[in-house]
Length: 201
Image (cartoon, rainbow, N blue to C red; front, side):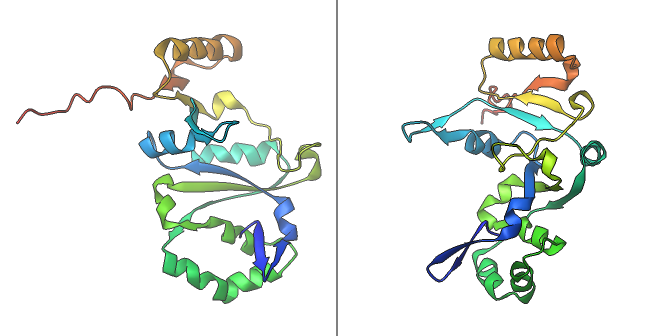
């Protein structure tokens, strides 16, 4: 479901969009596309710049922890990547039309959030969708919500392959000493290491 639905020349904001929050995860491991594309953002001058980042990893069964520690309804679903001709059929799809006409939040609205263009298939995305009670929504910015997790039992960190090793080592020591993470929970991607599998012909 688009946040913005065009109705002729008017822009229409669907009322349920204010009630749905989402996290985007990926089934991919060390993906060159994800490291490069997701970390290339515009700076204050409008110029694209490659920033450093960190990948957070978990398992689907551990997402259950979020619903155990927080109030609200939680769902997850794998994104369906559609070709252009398939996307062009959606405005005439009766189930899509019916779900968007309904201004009361229901699970059909969530299904419309699991559709993307085929060109994004490299993401191999899973969306974790939350319908939260008011007290979990940020008080000054309702686009954000706060969720309680137990990070030591929930996630591992994998740092950017472009990060200098001394910076990675410093961050790893900080996470271990300050927050109690185990050393095996914190690694650095080796994606940019020299390719050792070059064969001379």
